[in-house]
Image (cartoon, rainbow, N blue to C red; front, side, top):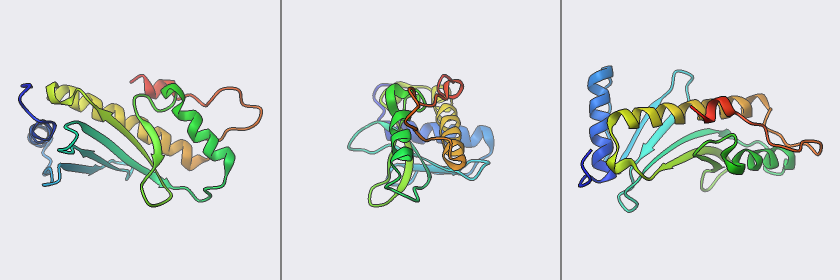
Length: 158
């Protein structure tokens, strides 16, 4: 990938190449957003905000039913600790609501290849799917006896 490309131009090239290879019919919006739904139904968004010139992956993991559930919220924060369960991304609340999201900024995107993009996309969706599964099953929770956060090592080291 040439250094002269912006992150948005790189994203447009990668998605066009993936479309050709996989038979998809997708486009990057005028706002620099590209999205798709995984086989499990999770929506993944890939954005290249012009003002940042990076690529950001994000996925909504669902609504937090009780924003005052301290054990659950402490468990989420523990997942972020040194990326033990989130890899290179992080958990956070979507602006203006109580929906939990997993996101990852890819700073080196402008100079990467389509293969590197596909690898990062795969890594991101694998971690996001495992986090969603743990949240849906209620296994992300810190208890007073828990000395270390739950680790998803097999997924964060993809």
